[in-house]
Amino acid sequence: MLARVIEAAGIPTVTVTMMPILAEKYRTSRILGVEFPFGHSFGLPGDIAMQRETLLAALDLLATAVEPGTVVHHGREWPVDRRTAYKSWQPSEPSPIVAQSMEAIRQARRQG
Amino acid sequence: MTIDEVDSYAFLPRAFRTIYEAEPWADHEPAWAPFEPPVGEARVALLSSAGIHLLDGQEPFDVERERREPTWGDPTLRVIPAGVTQEGIGVTHLHIDTSDIEADINVALPVHRLAELAAEGMIGEASPVNFSVMGYQEHGAATWRDVTGPEIAARCHAADIDALILAPA
Image 1 (cartoon, rainbow over the protein chains, first blue to last red):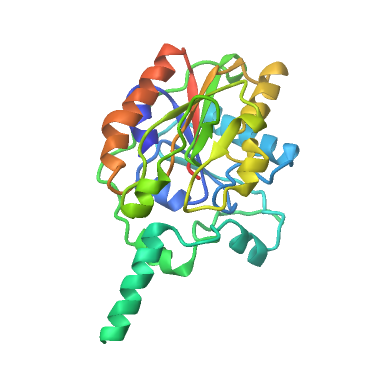
Image 2: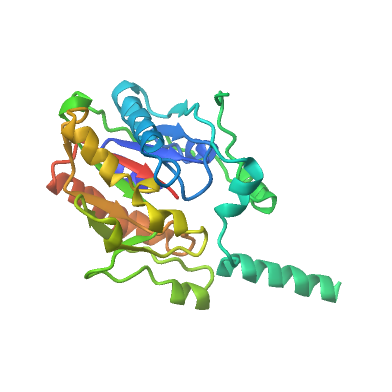
């Protein structure tokens, strides 16, 4: 949503996102999809080559996209096994909204 | 092995998937600002929504209020200079584990990689200013649209930025 506001104000944008389908639904101008864990748009900590490769892919999209809604899927696989990566991006305790939702479900079950 | 098409739900807990799948398609065309200069001459800025702030002189994003009001997320902006050091930042975001960003800012806001590309002539210049927000927005989303977004755009214009790379965390 920020991308749209900024692009509409005349600044070309590229959005690097783990959820390209959502960026497409929001009608984002240029989308680089990355299949990386949340919080890790460019790569692993300390992996300079991977971070650079992702940034260069974003710059390449900037240079080559000729129409709104261009989507590129970054080919790089996350180099950590899926189960570990899935767990490690998540916070150690649920966010307030998730905790609240879980509590609401528990209460509904108790009443049901 | 390489990925042909990114699975948007690959790392998402299953309970969230239905929420995002139900998200409607926006009924407007994408905004479009043509990118004019060769990348090798462009001044490029970065934006992350990972909740990064400068330890010196900036407040962290207000997660205490979010703990009290779970549908509220801090919609304010932090401006991060190109010369920021790893030791100079804090990260505040209740929806992701922030430890990898606390170890290496370039995971979310690759300011040091951008500086290297500028030094090598791969881009014209790294912007002197980059942008940081905190990505959990429900009630704050209107403030992003009406205040934070326009402020970022105005700062991009003021700094003669040719393009902005956004990375939702």
